[in-house]
Length: 95
Length: 490
Image (cartoon, rainbow over all chains, first blue to last red; front, side):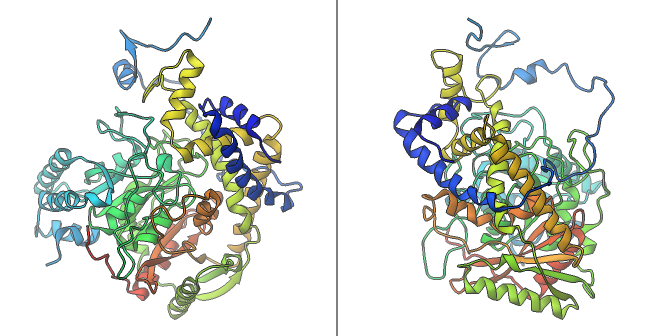
């Protein structure tokens, strides 16, 4: 499997990354270099093997459904690039 | 008398206890050394005022006989750990002047035990790199140079600032993190000791996430004993990290001098890779001899899926990274670059805020997770990961620990390997397997090569058996009698 400039544009959009037109083809080459190296995974016999998402075989712990944090509005907003009163300000999301 | 910034952490604790010097004096000596070491670019921020205030508070506690296990010890903190009120960048531009209102669990454990913060250490952006050349704040320079040369070398990565600072006497120890080798490979490149503990040993809470199923914190120090002291303070269960293990933290320091008689040390034959320098073969063989002399049995073992570890890692880690880094959208924190609409604002913010390698990995991750490719890449890589973990399980039915080289080369020149991503990725060939299997691994300096650069040996242990890593690492350290230091040129 390999990617072309069109696919790179699609992936960049999925990842919300601006990529200049003249960077699409070089990026495709770089990704193909990595992908062709990765192809060797097809040699491995993985028949009947369960995919491993975590090295820990303990179930995810649960906690009591109680409030343990809060009332830190100013802390939450402190690093925002744009705020107004007690709100984050962002570009319009719904037309 | 040894200069205060050249002591080991253990010797500094003794000196403080004997009242040979105060934490303020010890801290000031490090701040002075840091001020004279800007050429290394190891620190992004020196927290001078905070360091002196913390040192004074520590001296006060000592007066009142309230001493913690790290009382008065000045440390450097990798800039991946959130520090309350101190800018945290993860080596990236995209976080801007992000100043956390909270403290990571690991660093908070260190302060609780009496340690003093000197500043925040440079690193590869979002911990993605093996040379520290991917920092948005410029590369870290290795304090080591080849004999007679003046070429600038990389300190390894991603914890390059941590390793360089420890090697150059700019802190007594440093926090670091390791997703594919980012503690152990820089330790090997700088003649320092670095341990990545078992996955879940240290809380990940408050550490900027790269690949959550692989990321683990650990210390870089100048000796094995120092690493044991520091790791004990860093470790422990934390309810704020659901993957943090509920396991007792043993006295790692006691393990450093434990007898090795009867221990079975496995030598994985697949780690003899093509093109490995003869000198690395030689120090590996020396390591086997040293451990035989301690009464260990050296046995050959096989980890048949070793060569597939890095390709699997370069699917799994970018996939997790592309999800984790989705949060950098320029809305709630960090830098925003305005576009014509919301989508364009996202794309500009992320396209301009992330560096080249980070963008490349996000793209890789987005691709292997995208519709139509998920099973072929991501699920397959997770199955290969299971095979790799199984290899270790089989090997550990025959032996107690594994001995390997840490890295396939010594430190290389800045700019020497930037053009080929895959060549750069191969730096982690011996370290990445322990991340995929969640196992502890320690790197200990074993020798200088014929150009005068340090080389490390790695000991990989069973899950939650850092003690055997420290015991074997301690024996290697004593036998190697490695006490070389970089000659000061900076």
